[in-house]
Image 1: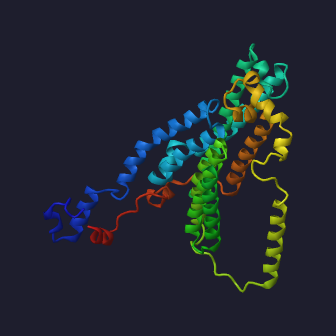
Image 2: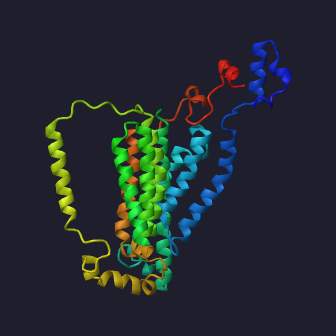
Image 3: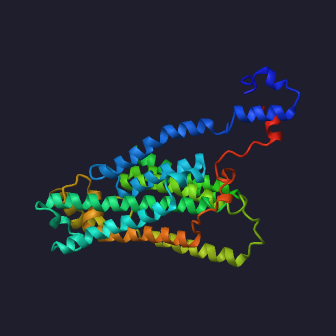
Length: 164
Length: 202
């Protein structure tokens, strides 16, 4: 660190002059490495969340796990870049909509099966082929779970982190 | 081999649990709590419950550790020194703990053939055999969670939703006024470099 600063700067007699130059040269120096690494990691975390969401039918995973993973990307962003930056990316009002939207999607799927003549959450009636109906139903329901869990977890984080 | 791994994991689990109880430093206790969840996730993998392990690792050791750390910022990092512990409290704790351990004696041992799940395997066997034709998902856990027991999962989602609403109404997310929006008081943000700090650091 000492070497990176030109010698003439360290030898300046005026203390105020030195400070100003240093602040200009190294703004927000301390978290730079973390910020760069975080920016690299976040897309992969989001991608893995989507994978867990949509591959839950075939492997381990599903809406709950995917929601937590998706939310953890935003939590990571909030820890490294500060809550104000993250609020600009994902505002609390959007989160409120997400929380309700997921539950609505789930319950709406149930209501749709009722309207189409089946029992509540009996996905067989959603398509001509019962297996396709099951596929669509589980897809919608898991998506609803994922959206709600993402919204709630990020809301919890905002709630705790914005009070300090 | 599997037994050895299970024994090692459960031993670690017990050690970490004792550590959490003994530690007075709350920050270290929270970190140990994350470790506890991670070891529990490993134990679940040994028991072939991959979905549960996944959830435990993500929620238990990931998010809840962060939330505990957030909660810690409201309080001090040190537990208050205890007052004089009364004998009566000790007696009550010993009796309650003894009753709980006595209760576990009735539980069937892990994987035992005459446990209730093994004695009445109709439902489990049915799910395993028929779910691929009825639901068409290779992952039976997803079939049960989202289709057979979809009503329960709707309830779980509502519980999560209710938790979010509760936190919103208790803690609130007030829109900050512009003068409060100074980036320096954002958590995790770089503190403003003050002159003395610059001098000492470089």
